[in-house]
Amino acid sequence: MSPGYPAVSLHKYLGLLSGPLRIHARGLLEDEDIECLEAAGLLLPDGVIHGVVCDECDFGHSAEVQFDPDIAAHGWYCPDAGFVTRPAEDLAAYRINVFAFACALALAVQGSSELIADQPREIDDRLWDLGRLKFGASTFFGFLAIKLDDVERFARLNDSIRRRARPDFGAVFIPTSAAVLGVQLDLDYRLAPLPDLLSFDGTGGLQLDLDRLSQFLGPGPAAQPAGRKGRRSDTQLTRIVAEALIESGRMPSGRNARRNAIAAHYRTVYPDRDPPSGSAIVNHMNELGLWKPRRAS
Image (cartoon, rainbow, N blue to C red; front, side):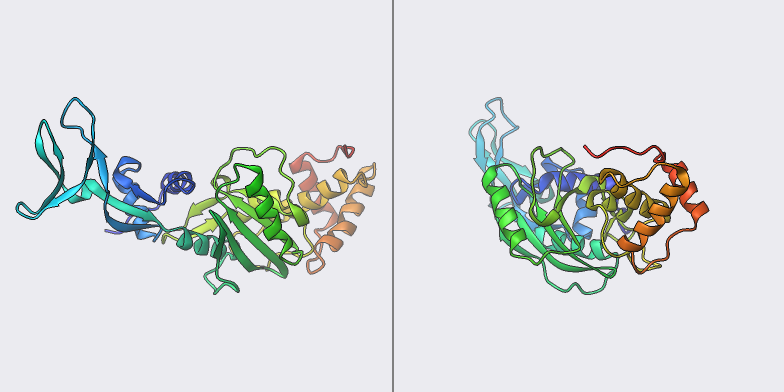
């Protein structure tokens, strides 16, 4: 029976990425999580764990896991209980396959299983360069920053960004939704929190909510290709254009003037797409509640 691929298993996995890469999975995950993540290639079996805290006595001492060939069993020695055996699956160790995760994430950005232009590579501790990816007619460079917990890590990330040419879109994917205050990324790169964007598809691959990703990236010079899975909706494209005008203080007053400004700016932001009709823009703006202009701060 093939495993399911629940979102909760993936979210638990994201929470493990910043910790030790060799783990006692049974102590951190449910059986269905392990089955799912192993089937997806994100967890790799890696023998048994090296040590345990004894749960057979009242002392809670540390003990080395051993294999006793006489009884063909794994366990540990306890001064009080003797040799304590456990099924091998209860002591199984797994290695977190960050490379497989980075590759799957890169494919998810493209929205397809096509070969990616650059193979992801780890350029620093828990910092991965996802390379140049296909993103419609645009250039997209992505990074996976698993740990951004001190100034030096931010400096190394920005240094890596500056080594790339300026892209149309640039994102730094992070495995947490927690706000990272005071972040200033070079070349207009944006932070993209994976828990808000990422899920499994039905086969164990990863898929990104590209509509939500567009909210983090902001407006860009080209649209994604028609028919692509996860393509931004026309309403969201209108939102991006309208908010760019609002934030820059260039949104005029009067509905007709705003509608015309959106249509004109739409051609600038998305030159390979025809703008929505005037009535469609009105409907989009009503749906989004963006008719009232805001001044740039």
